[in-house]
Length: 114
Image 1: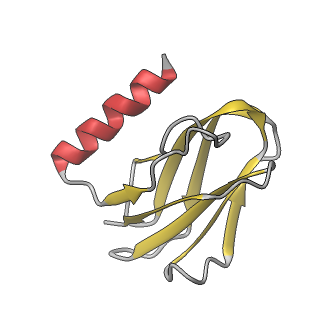
Image 2: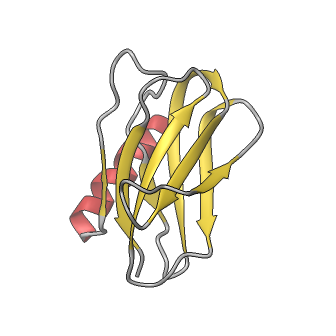
């Protein structure tokens, strides 16, 4: 059910022109679906994604794709992940990597705050 919701949110966001991109999930990856960047404001953004197995993940992010120095994480292992990144600057593009504990290649993307 939540996967269908993530797909619907992604489709609606693309129709409305929200600025977000992400790499596609690798079928061999623990990440089951590409992340959705939801509720982008001038100072925050919410990232949603699913993993195939219960896992701890973290998001590294920053305003330069090759310099992701900030980290957002939840310590609990789960399959449905949701992280809100706060303290962002308005009208800035942020790049992110979603890493799983399994050490597989991270999923990358970007979004622009309002």
